[in-house]
Image 1 (spheres, each protein chain N blue to C red):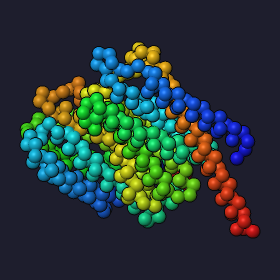
Image 2 (cartoon, each protein chain N blue to C red):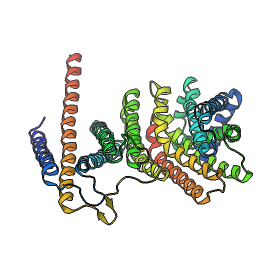
Image 3 (cartoon, rainbow over the protein chains, first blue to last red):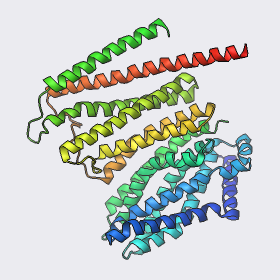
Image 4 (cartoon, rainbow over the protein chains, first blue to last red):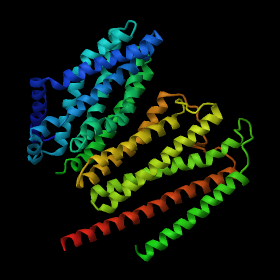
Length: 229
Length: 232
């Protein structure tokens, strides 16, 4: 990245973070929504099967992904409402830099939610865990968030220009994120199981990394066409 | 419609009729019953349709992927038509794959649905992925509609093998694996009818694609005439 692109990237990211810092709309809504879904899972699934440790990973990632849809859905919306988007699109900023700043902001929002929701969900669903497992799960969160961030930035850039953007985004995003949910849930279960299944954990993490690289390349190849206005 | 287009679609239609007719006769009357050790008997005959429909749906999505990339390079309405029609036909074939797979599951394993079969689960995801294409398309407006559709055709096609792999690592493999890296695990008397059924399905896809492309072109021409008349 050349120095001017780096400055543009930092400015766009700062704008997103400052907007969120002032309003706190996205993170609070995502966090509360994720907690509500977690509790829904407890009453619909947990109450019936008793020991939820074995399925905790799946519940955590289904919850976080549904919460992420809310956050991704807010992407570009403030800019669109205040007509800032027109100014950003006119500005001589490479589309790729916009995409990277948007992805980074999404990853940071998701991590902000997960710092609170994941430990709580582990307390709710898992029967005792070690700090080492938590560190491994933090690694899964970072990898899965990069996947969700890239896919979210890519698809939300299309849905924001659509007539029914709130309806379109979940329909587009959730099927594309199912592989991420499967791998992140599997890696979390592998990290939480006793003894820890490190070979499985590494396999799932590798899958997440490959997913991120493939869709980063797809985003790199197509993003110019999405915001070609 | 030009004479060449008529000739092409007639020839392709005739070839499709011959191939599908031959495959129906062949696989019901000529192909041997699967009576070997672990054989499934008569129900195995659904394999010829099920697998050829599944492969042709992937072919349709591959055509949409290529046409999507071509549209982004050179935005011509024709490429957008190819993306739209290929995905529409591919989705029909994918739904048929899920239905025939479910029938096969009922006969082979006694249940209409088995999540532990990775291919059936993947095709369900594929149906969801490509159904979203139509939601996006109907929601986007103007020139963006074709552009976004092309981008989504690319994203969805790349998601297919990733979804397949994800479902596979999540589950045990219970589906009979017929095609391995060492070749097809079936006798030549079955393989020949499978190849004919596959060719028939592929020909059916290309015939329908041609027909719909002709219809789209006629519709656009009609629109232009209407506009010209309105302007006087």
